[in-house]
Image (tube, rainbow, N blue to C red; front, side):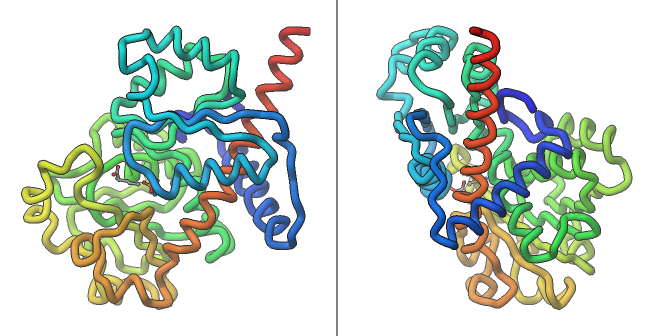
Length: 314
Ligand code: CP
Ligand code: NVA
């Protein structure tokens, strides 16, 4: 397994399966009241440039429940905002903490931190990707559908960071994925080409959401304007007419389709209020599973890296 999770393309199928198995096990043990503290004495740094409710709290509570300590930093409170080079900050933080979780705009910033850190660096969302979200969402799919194999997953909405990470997951795991976006807001061409090279047959791109959701086992959506795109909101609302996940669209999928959203949801925009409250929606389970999956990620990466560094320094 690689030191960092910057993109899901960093993982092999076996890595994905290790995370699913461990996250499901940790969830079961937590629900049985068993306390696991494999990260006692370890520290996790979190640097966030964008807002977060779920990812931040899920990582912080995950670290605390595993016996470790989280340290939250807004980057404007660090010397990075006063032009201390990233490579210096990364090396210094590597001397204090055991893992770094970052949420930033520019994807290359997380890559630069990872390249200059001796500790694991985890991408908690950039403008390009949201890998840990898809790991926990696949855990939810396994819980609800028993497997990710032979499950038709349909993305309806913006070709954004979350969609990109779905495409990466599909290319590693061979998922049956349909991506329906308005042509103007389709996914990044490089990401599409890269994914198609690996998994030509199972990923389909379309601008027709109604046809896309036929026989879907999973319908997934996300906000039309992501963080940092607030100025585009009005323009995007016009372009996304017909892309709202509502009862009419969901009725075209299988009866037992699950509707997923990474949240926060904008009711009346990408998702209709009535869908949020149906038996098909699994948003709250998704949100809960972020904590269990983040535990599995932290435990695996930190313990793996500690062993590796122990061997190197010994
Ligand atoms: N889904 C998700 O990443 O939510 P937050 O922005 O609240 O972390
Ligand atoms: N695409 C959204 C995801 C939020 C969790 C955004 O980047 O704002």
